[in-house]
Amino acid sequence: MFPRFVLGTAAVLFAGLGVLFAVAPHWTAAWVDIALPTNTATIDFIATYGGFQLGFGLFLFTCLARPERVRLGLLASGYAVAGFGVTRALGLLVLGGAKPVLYGALAFEAVCSTIAFVAASRAAGRPEGLQPR
Image (tube, rainbow, N blue to C red; front, top):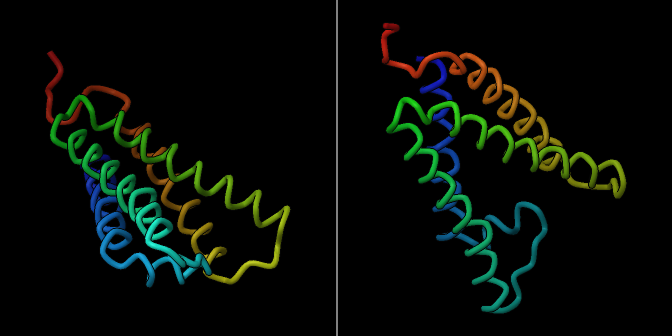
């Protein structure tokens, strides 16, 4: 139950953020001081932040629908979020001087990736819902 809950939460968060980035690009970009001065910049932001997050969220929902793919979805979300966190941490260490929102994002990414990996380890046995023979 725990692995499926974690994967479902990750799917909702990725898809939800993707929709938010796609429908409110200027507002969400402003959170981290990203300027979108042209339609080209706005469209690219929508595709990169909105499109990827939405697509990845749908992939996680696809994994959630098949018990044998729950672990795959958890590992994918764990690695994706860890990738955000590790590169964000490196940027903060090398460049410094960031707004507090980035430290909050880093903490959130550390917690979420850890939870995803713990849930993946719990799903490492038999697929959920299947009984041993």
